[in-house]
Amino acid sequence: MAIEAHPCANCSFYEHSLWRPVAGGNISTLNRSFTRRNLDAGHVLYHQGAPSDGVYCVSQGLIAIRSFAPNGSSSLLRLAYPGELIGYRAFLTERDHRTEAQALLPSRVCIVAHRDAKNVLRACPEVLAGLAIHCADELDRCHDRIQDAARSSNKDRLAQLLDDLMASHGTEKHDIRRMRLPISRQDLADILGVQAETLSRLMKRLESEGRMRSSGRWIEMHKPMTGTGI
Amino acid sequence: MAIEAHPCANCSFYEHSLWRPVAGGNISTLNRSFTRRNLDAGHVLYHQGAPSDGVYCVSQGLIAIRSFAPNGSSSLLRLAYPGELIGYRAFLTERDHRTEAQALLPSRVCIVAHRDAKNVLRACPEVLAGLAIHCADELDRCHDRIQDAARSSNKDRLAQLLDDLMASHGTEKHDIRRMRLPISRQDLADILGVQAETLSRLMKRLESEGRMRSSGRWIEMHKPMTGTGI
DNA sequence: GGCAAATTTTGACGACCGTCAAGGACGCGC
DNA sequence: GCGCGTCCTTGACGGTCGTCAAAATTTGCC
Image (cartoon, rainbow over all chains, first blue to last red; front, side, top):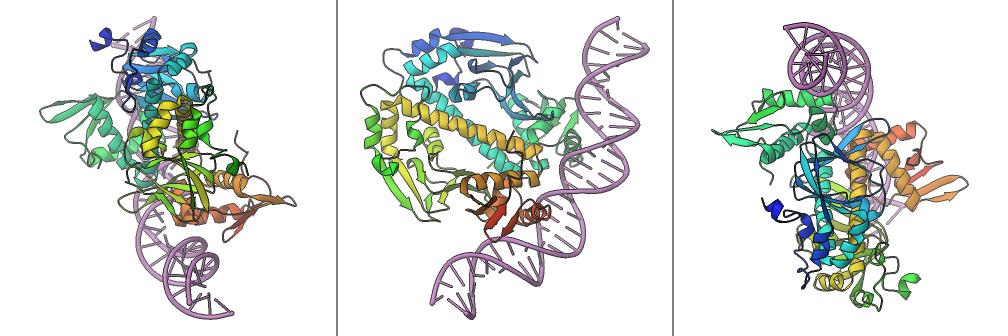
């Protein structure tokens, strides 16, 4: 696999559409600073409140970024897929992690340890640029989510969410799309910002409208339930 | 004022807690690239869908960052205060503006034109770092907002919002805090993601609970209505 | 100061969601 | 296979919000 041929081939560290790679090879500073780590499903990569320990890039699997409130309620802020960076917010702002990162599937991450990360970014402006671009992209997605919450019904947002998950995790066979949900119902509710009971009723409504069928963690549908974005 | 002594003294372009300023003075590349512009209240700095025209830093006034849906509904994603950067998302991602920036008060912005911005960032990694940090900070605030929407009641979120506005725009006299709201009721509703009618009722409820009083755009209260954050 | 336009408020109603409580399904270990 | 714990579902109910329509207030302008 490409991942073996390169420390982190599909890794956003190497994104630099704005800045050409530095001639010569400062990028090797980055290459020398990588560590890799395998995570079992359920493993917590870093905890909320912990000090920044570096910058991570997901290379395989799926990582949930969660936040817990003092009263116990939790939000699922983000699902990080291969190629995406996590943990950089704490590093950039030099504050503690405000979220928890947990592997939802068996996963692998590339790590640039905190002590190396500053040197890497000093040596490789193109990596810093990649970080900034990645951050701006995530900001976009957050804005979308805020607008969505204000504009769309929870039912429509659930349909959109399931469509997105299906696009990432589903398989198509004989015109039927099928997937095993990578996240629990509670997590689905935490993404939408509703209670688990409400989520259950929303699912039932989508089913009663014939838009999809679900049984346990398995979901199937014929076509995307929404207008496939814009 | 300090603003006269320096192109944009209270400007986040100069934020570089992680990276020391480059010895010698690459920073002068930035200093040479500034333009300033005064905006009347109501003026639109850039429109949704327009191509990126540069990076801006608010130096005086107040700028609203809005997004409009095809159906006409709008969200107010952010209020940008002096010292904050705007327009950098479109620049970093090399995509069109997804939001509109409108001055709510007579304002002044520093501009690094699009054609200069790349050069500045290439010449000044510390400026690029400042951009990344600023972006990470804004991401934090977005995450807070998403969690807030899921966890707190709209009434509590309105109280928090008014407290924040009071802290920025209010004056205290004889133990009474007073301010003229810099934004319309509709904008308040757009920030919370509720309808104008709902906002009106929420205000009435806060008043009936004796937490504040309002008359037109004027609002007064004795103490912050919420527990002042954590 | 006064008029017209725009903004805000109020009322009524239905739909949706949170909460509590109970019941059911599923997975896991013995 | 059985029991147990966790996760999910269902029911009932009150509170909140969106929607439509109309009245009231504020704002901008002359």
